[in-house]
Length: 452
Image (cartoon, rainbow, N blue to C red; front, side, top):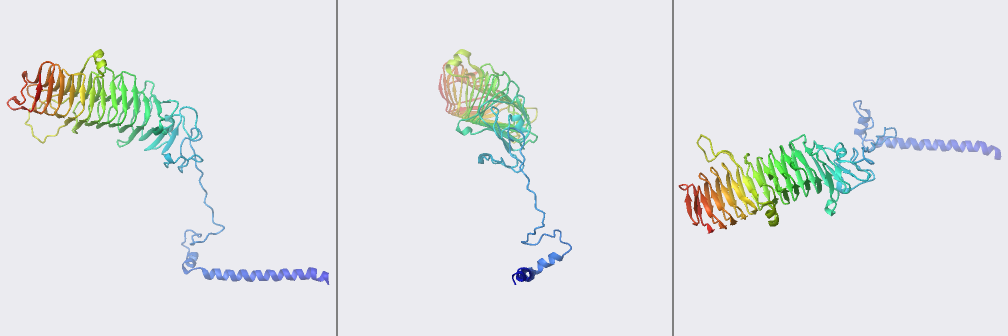
């Protein structure tokens, strides 16, 4: 009895279980088919269906899984920048989480993980508009470097006192981006060397540049240059803009050696200088006035040097020289003809033989400027038209305001103190009177306070 049940009974029990399971599966399949919507059933049977697995909310076991792309790192120490997906892998710094490879790090000293070993190497792996973050420490060699795209080069954590050191070793860095609108920006770095801007835009922000060559520290052959809270110290000319659109200097200071021809020379379409110091040079600032945009000086100090330095090196030739074109042509003039004008407001000029010089063809104004220890305080050449208001000239050695025959304009409420010579002279005719007209009304003086 046991043997008969043991084999035959177990077989019958297994067969019954299989039949029951089959019935349940058939019932479930029938319910699943009934659960399909009309649209799904139509899509399933539609021969135009592009993807046979495109049923809504249905995942099939046989659908080919999509492969995930692994992040790819580039050269450098452990990969200097982001991969194609913008990841640093296991190194993630929220401060520099730009995507698409737009921020990389550079360590010019000891190798660092995820850092390139030089700025030139980093430039090969960063795109237009990206950033190169340089770790402070060992200096980075930038000799003869060419930057041909818009980029920002900045110190890592410079806000906390660390500053990157870039050294040119006698060869200037060339700034020549592909697009005129591209911006090459240096931020919070120290540069020992020189730069040449060919085109595009060059921006300094909190940069200290030192140039020990007798050549130009920053030479501008085209484009636009701006400097904010930065310093440039040079044996030669600090900024020589031979050609360009605009130069803007805000804050900071610029100094050249005593024998340098200029501290700043501007042959550009327009310029804006404010709240900055300009020191040294035979001439402090020369402005060519070749463009059609205004040139403005606001609270700018132009000084030859400290008093002790001036005794040793002697006075400079001129503090600010505004150069102009020829005083006219052989055609009648019109008041709406295009031209440039210069405005100087506030600030100090000291230690030069001539404080401010307005050359022929210039239309300019000087208001509230303090000119100390000049030979001649303000010089206006023939063909220049000026408006001089509320300026203070002290310790003039020859003339407070020197006007050449043919100069035009007005001078009102100026305070002039002369150690020798006269307060105001026009074409050799000098006076100490407060109100006077010269050149048959071409130049009018009023409210002059004179101490000669």
